[in-house]
Length: 398
Image 1 (tube, rainbow, N blue to C red):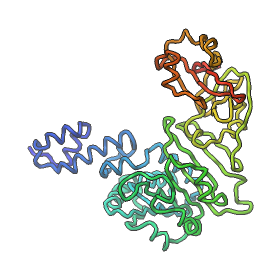
Image 2 (cartoon, rainbow, N blue to C red):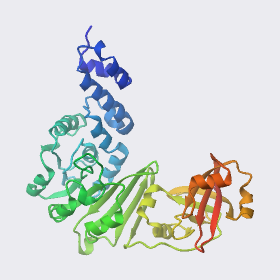
Image 3 (cartoon, rainbow, N blue to C red):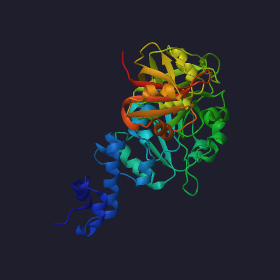
C-alpha cells in the first residue's frame, strides 16, 4: 500500500537520511526531497531545538537555515535579556526574522501587545507563519519584505532586534559589523529614534572592544557574551538613548557559560588587576569571560589575584565554588629548569594548557614526555616577575 509523504515522514524520521535517499525508489508515492528535508530538519531540531521537535506540525527549512539559526539554549537566554526591556503593553519588532527561533522564544516568554516578524525570503516567511501558529503565536504579525524598508516606515517600538546576515555575496562568513547585512552602523541613529531599546546579535569572533567604539559608548548599555559548553556562540549588544537619571552608571558586561553567569558593571576601558600570591587554588575563567576580557572585574568580585597581567589565570587561598570557570587545587609549582622539572617525573599523562608561555602544548608535552588525559592538570605560564613556571593541579574542592 502506498504511503503518503506525511506518513512516510512520521514513520522514518529517526532513520538515516542518506540510507533513505539511497532507497528512495521503494516509495514512489512520496515527495522524497521534501520528506528528506523534513526528516533531516526534525533530527537537527532534536539536538538544537528540542521544544520545536516536540511540537507537532512544525515544518523545517533547508539545512543551511537550520545550521544558522539560534539554539534553544541561546534563544531562551536572549528572550530573558529582551524581557527586561519589553512590557506587556509594548511592541517587539524583529527586523531580520530568519527561521524565527529567537522571535518565537521572545513571544512565548514576554507576550507583548504587538509582535512583528520581518523577513525578506518568501519561503522563510511562509514557514514562520505556519510554525508560529503551531507554537501558540497566532497573533504574531508576519511581514515578508526588507527589514530596512520596514524600519523606515514603522511606528515606534519598545524593542527592535537585529541579527544581521554574516555572509558575503559568495557565501563566505564575515565578522566586521560593516560587512554584515544590514549595516547597523549606518542604521544606528534611525534604530535608536524608532525604538526605546535596540538589541543586536553579532558574531562571536567580533572584537567587542572595537564594536564598543564603532557603535558608540554613549548609547551602548549592555554586552552579553554567550557561550555554550565553553564555546563562545554569540555577542549581544543592547543600545538605548537613555539619559539623566534613567541612564545606567556604566557599561554592563554579562558573561554567560551554560549555567554560570558573571555580571559586572564598570567604566570602560577595563583595568587588569596585577598581583601575586601563594595560593592553594587556581582558577581559569570560562570562554565567555575570556572573550570579554573583564579580568579586573573578576578580581573585584572574587578574592582572587591574577598570576600575571597576560596569563589570564587567577589564584586564591580560598575555595570559590561560584567562580565562573574551572576550579583547581594546586599541588605544586615548579620552575622550568631541568632540576625543578624532575618534580613532575612521576606523571605519565596530564592535561596541559599554556598561557603566556613561549612553547606550544605539543612541544611541552614532548618535553615532559607526557600522554594526554588523566586527572592531573599542568598550566605552563609566566608570572608577573617574568619567571616561567608549571602549576600542577587537580580538579579541586575544599
